[in-house]
Length: 174
Length: 177
Image (tube, rainbow over all chains, first blue to last red; front, side, top):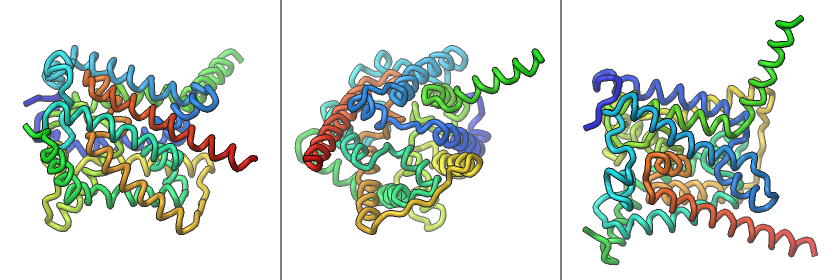
């Protein structure tokens, strides 16, 4: 069990507050900069513009630098950094539905990745861009956000069970 | 004179910096690592500092669990905490504050068919993202954390974007001729 700077009793209290403040800062800067992960790749492919793409590439680099920095400062909080060395090169960080083998998680990376990119380019923005557009008064983006809210209940109640059952049926169970 | 010049220069640099996407990328990356260092005692998973899809899921399911007494699945950090992670609510508030301050808040309506399309796209994107275990942002954080499967997600996403943009380009060319 990883331990961070705050003890558990304090952390459970500060989780909503810290994430809310972090979100406000990110939302403010995202509105100013028109930040978008999908838009970066799209603009580079269509016009060879690198401005928005630089945001996403910087995010990858900065997260590595950030995790490295806090790995030095608070090693107990970064138990499994660098993941590929500590936990095997092809195991994913937990978050996806559990109980499947490595090949299933590779499929879970490639197929959803492709379709997230495809859908997002048709609606003109990744989830954060849609959320920011909704807060700017775009009704279409607001409906996208409502769809995400309904989808999260659907996923927890039905879809995750289906996906795991389907992958087990195809022989990817542990 | 000199101090005013310095102040204006600093203001210009700040303004350019705030409006550049790379600055936000660096901010999210460092702060996500910081929030993990601060809050990981509340529970996993790791590399979970910022994610639009997962944090929406945690916020909606966590609040539904609290209000309606259901037990929908959510990440441990939100399950153990007083309230679930609130960063998506923060993004909405921050975007609204910024849009109002800079007079960019404008109501844009669409047709009912468009609303339905965006709604279904929202459901689909969230479910696909949760099957992977993160939206493009968490994929980037996971890549930074050393998870090689997240690189596959980013490459596949870029391929999807290129394919979709190519389809749109073809469609636009057909409409022109």
